[in-house]
Length: 508
Image (cartoon, rainbow, N blue to C red; front, side, top):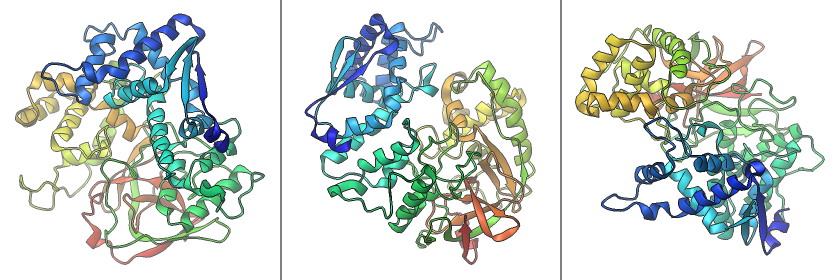
């Protein structure tokens, strides 16, 4: 299929949102506007994410203060971005390889460059995320990634297989293994008409396929990208025959589960910087030996946060407050049992030293904002204000407002910002389906939902973030990989000098 698309003079994409001519016309109208919206930001305003988003809001009202909601045109556009076309894996080949692409919406033709600019502006401005139903609209993000892939291939530099698998893992196909084969076809692994993955055959069952690919990536040095895409912590129905350290690329990643590593934004550094990775797969690909450090074991856990049906992640609202509040109260109680806080002297110049409140705010968001950047102290203050708002602790809210007002702006504006949309998406992305934990050395952690008391936190050599392991059948030398975790106090290498001797963990 890759060769077919690469040889095609033109590919025509037909999308018919709702089968309604009126909605098709609305989509084309929005696409035309969105393609040029940055040029419409006039006056003294600079062209930024915020000014472009405000310009879109003025026209389509998707975040209107009067609560009337988005216009019908904008709803049609957002519905268009949720079309199944965006999620099919063959579309990745289609967009990445074809020489020319034209999009047909109903009976209306839209040029490729117009569609490209419109969707990029929608994605980069954050306008789609701020609409009421942003949680299920990922077409803009997927489209942007496909365009990036197209640029690499056009330049004769197809990306590594590990990067393609990680980026497009959520894509769908009728046959599970067809997704993996399609992604191999647009990666460096298939360049020059060769196939270097040893023993790979289309007759392989999905379990055999993903094990062979994982072994191939480990042998090529992409082992950390393999390990951090794996783990049974976010998916309990692990495919039979697939070891815990092998990602099942034939399936979409979990709906919830915060990826701590491999961000384009800020990277953590839990491992010593001068220690390279040391991992090796067994000949059959069923085991992985990894060198790292034992940090501690889980001793206490909260329940996982599961909001239940009918809940859409988004801004501050009554339903979100009702569901989140009890879980935050329990998390705060657990954090309050930490016996030692700030053992080092605190000074305004010591940016690495946090109060208990700040430690809590960092952990419930896994240390990053929704742009995947590290939280600033001002953002941590907003997180703590948001927590006080949703838990209804008026005394704590007043105290925190008094403490941060000079640093983060007028009280009234701050409260409104926090209420409307400021923090909830960060919290949702970090914590939905997760649970808080304490380690035996009193570290406060955010761990996968299936974590148990006795699970081991370790840091592999060369890894950005810690991993959670579980001894198999009481065997302290063989472990199942649960998944990555956030451990307050070690994410930026604060304790690397205290790690002690490295040891080898056998993952199975």
